[in-house]
Image (cartoon, rainbow, N blue to C red):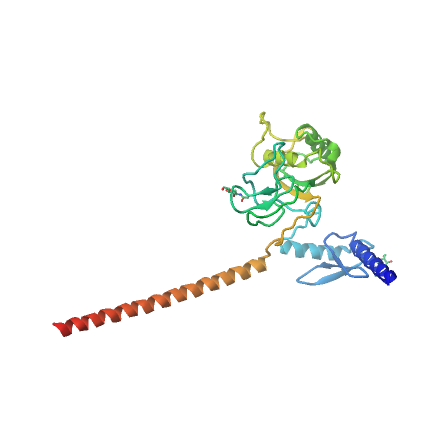
Length: 312
Ligand SMILES: *[C@@H]1O[C@H](CO)[C@@H](O)[C@H](O)[C@H]1NC(C)=O
Ligand SMILES: *[C@@H]1O[C@H](CO)[C@@H](O)[C@H](O)[C@H]1NC(C)=O
């Protein structure tokens, strides 16, 4: 009996292992599923092109997929995006946080209201909003941030190697974070996009990635937080790089627990239609009621008139 249970566990473990391996190394937009693993690419309106991921994908399929993605407004750039399925961005903006005496965020935040949520060590909401009885067991650490930076057009071409060095140096010199934490920097010259992965070991509680990311966000989006308000303009081979956009992805040691990942267009449309229908129904009801009321008042007046006439 026990033997069967063990065997069952083994099969499950193997299946899980196999599904984790089910991916297309040669095409990042591919969707893969099943055992044996099968991958395909969406190349038209719902058209699935089966792929052989042991080799490079034929250019014609790729171009078809790119045209499809461009029509759909999907990204065709080669770098960036979510570093992990569980990565998330800050959609809330700032709130009035509760801090520990050492400057850490309290795990539960309510922005001075009755509505509360749990945050990670970067103070970014990682649960749904709930009432004030919400429990946040612990402050979950953000151990990986991905910074997507976009720079403005430059006069001369940017040397990728020098660019990467300049960004790593800035993280160490300007943002005081050891550059050993910079695990990867990618550059897409056509998109003018720089993707910087800053990562620390799980369990590391000494380095704080949230400060660096916040200072850089302010540097690029608003104004520097430093007293000396010199702009953040990494010097790349004598050419100053002007950064115009930043997007920060957070990866926590534990996956966040949002229930509604995002409302897709279709779902939003349905909600709008339902709300409109309900409102229309209420308006009709209200008008009908009013008309009835008006009729009632009129009859009353008429009756009164009749009584008065009878009396006179
Ligand atoms: C995939 O491509 C490899 C290399 O060209 C080839 O050996 C293999 O037979 C192909 N697999 C399928 C299912 O077509
Ligand atoms: C926090 O409260 C302020 C003012 O009451 C509001 O402007 C802000 O949007 C709130 N932030 C969040 C994340 O709820």
